[in-house]
Length: 168
Image (tube, rainbow, N blue to C red; front, side, top):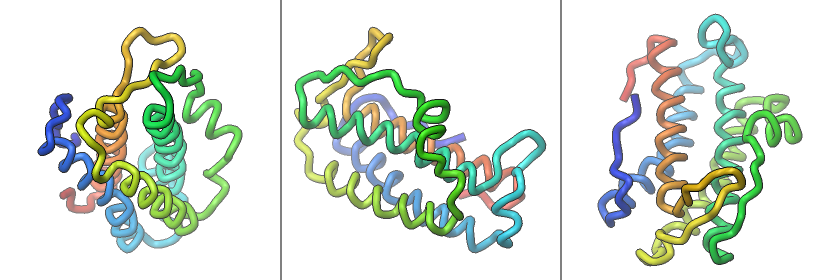
């Protein structure tokens, strides 16, 4: 399981989240180095996604979270439409059709943009929030970034565990 990070947006917790987000592309590249090309296409376990499909899933979720973060930073409590990362976004963009290396390059670029946006935000900007259609609770920039970092790390640890690679 991914390490726990408090929901409180302290400077220390923000630094942990930024480090986790920044490290994900390198961890996925390391996975790539440990797997033969055919292993990238095979399900990790019966009924599960392949490493390439996990990366496509990560990109779908990352895109929705990043869009919400950018909206929170640009608008006052924007209403973010209810678009499911897999069923809606993924079905439209079909990242799973691309190869692992291209998806990884795309994630690296997107991550540089996100980290560049988040670095140096004031405490007030980290607290900016969104409203999500159909939900009462508002999500702050910090909670969205934290959720993304934990989600991605959980997937990477799961792959390592199931493929008997040494977890971090």
